[in-house]
Image (tube, rainbow, N blue to C red; front, top):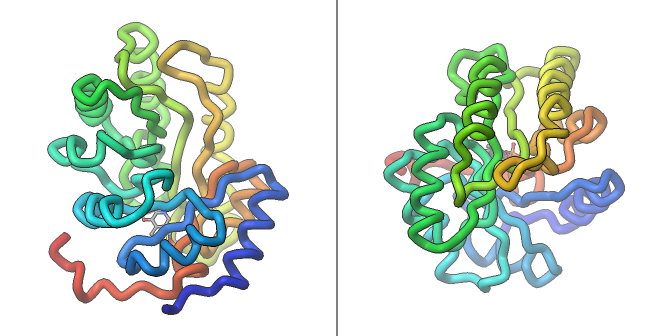
Length: 229
Ligand SMILES: *Cc1c(COP(=O)(O)O)cnc(C)c1O
């Protein structure tokens, strides 16, 4: 087990001081590692492969709050809809509609975060500012009864340029604040998910209240066995 319990305690204290939730990102890591944090009282875990999440959920206690943080394909929503706590990376209206459909099927209100494209890199997923505006307007006009939009999620550029990363976090916080006063049954923001192992202190300083930290806690990931997931 390569899990770093000291680091975990340290990060979880930092998060707590900022009134932020620490999502421990356990993707590619064995259930024993998750169990070790669970036994310390940790409940929020993040995964980004549907099959892996479903497998782990079946083997672990029911009171874990599972966060789906990866890129979700519409045809896979049905596998996580019965139990998922929060879906972070929702990046299209098509996906919002499918989540609503599955929520209806399972009699659940599914909590989601809309992913915003804040990085300069082309490859990152997410709504841009205009698309986000359209999506929110549409959801106000035609509410989907089984989804609840709790806030925004974003990923910064993969860069050591602190100023750039800060600027990207700031742009997401501005958008978050812009919608913070929209209150309906379907939309009420209370979650801004930003910050990972490399940049969570900066994210917290810029107003994040949910950080997603993996490798600092669980050790580096090896993707060898997961290439086709
Ligand atoms: C893997 C992943 C993380 C955690 O990354 P670390 O750098 O290991 O902390 C956070 N967010 C998302 C969306 C991820 O896919």
